Image 1 (cartoon, rainbow, N blue to C red):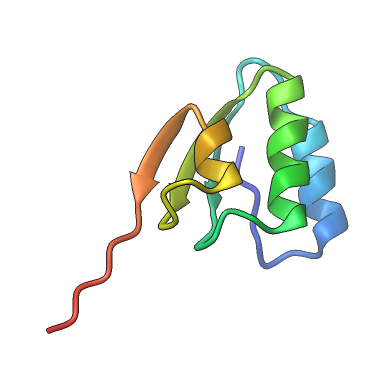
Image 2: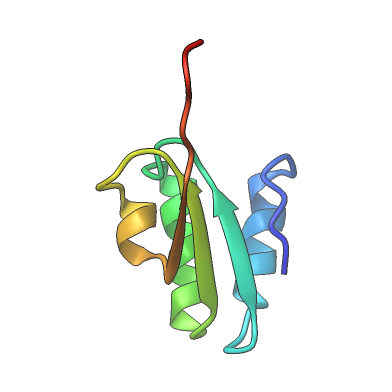
Length: 77
């Protein structure tokens, strides 16, 4: 399942609510702390879905509640 963050929030919530134990969702958020992200992650976890987080803040809500984590790393050249 892909939750496109460019859609309006009701679409994101609806897609998250349709998740199930076989769903794998990639959630991308720099901070991982927005209420919308928390709500979506909660829906997915309640349905026993898998959350892959792409985030940069190490102790964010998203990272703490994800099953797998990918870091966003910025390099200044």
